[in-house]
Image 1 (cartoon, rainbow, N blue to C red):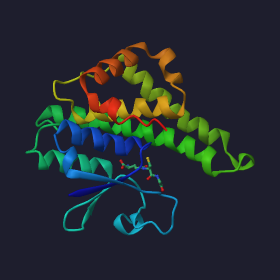
Image 2 (image 1 turned 180 degrees about the vertical axis):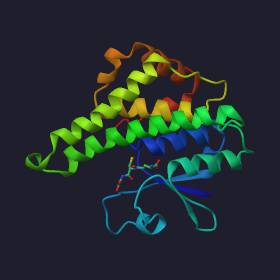
Image 3 (image 1 turned 90 degrees about the vertical axis):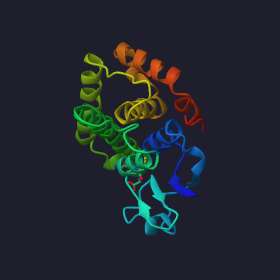
Image 4 (image 1 turned 45 degrees about the horizontal axis):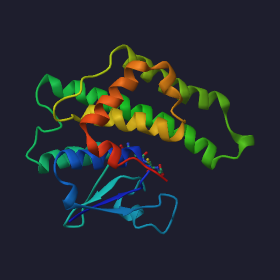
Length: 201
Ligand SMILES: N[C@@H](CCC(=O)N[C@@H](CS)C(=O)NCC(=O)O)C(=O)O
């Protein structure tokens, strides 16, 4: 059994869970919750960065980050399933980079509120992070990606990024991005794992 260290609300962990479901590997992965703030967490030995998701292999070695884990799962499933080959690979890698970067910028804003006392917060820095999210959404709204018969890694990453904005930013992105809303609805209809992995806490 593989062990996935993650938490239910993590957008990067969700990307791994959806990839596993699409590849038919969910029953080979046990999900073990990890608290990234707990200094006693074995996670810090499993991944020196102390970040989730981290995948523990059968021999005890570990893989991180989410980009490496999803590529490993694709390899286990025979390869070339959610990571296309040829030129198409690079448009999916670029889309994943954009979606993951959007998530990073969103997460940093959440952490600013969660971990920094209000008096110490830097509004210009937060606005800089918000700008990354906003520009990424604008670029995606102008040219929404395809949704492949078997969802590809960039598409999965984008769905998780938008899901994270729904979870932590009250879905405010929806009002100005109708094409992306339609894209996410179509993705959810095609990929049951999207709803199945939604954090309901
Ligand atoms: N690039 C990483 C990002 C992972 C990440 O930022 N995970 C967050 C939770 S969603 C985390 O572990 N935060 C705790 C920390 O940064 O210490 C990936 O793709 O896996």
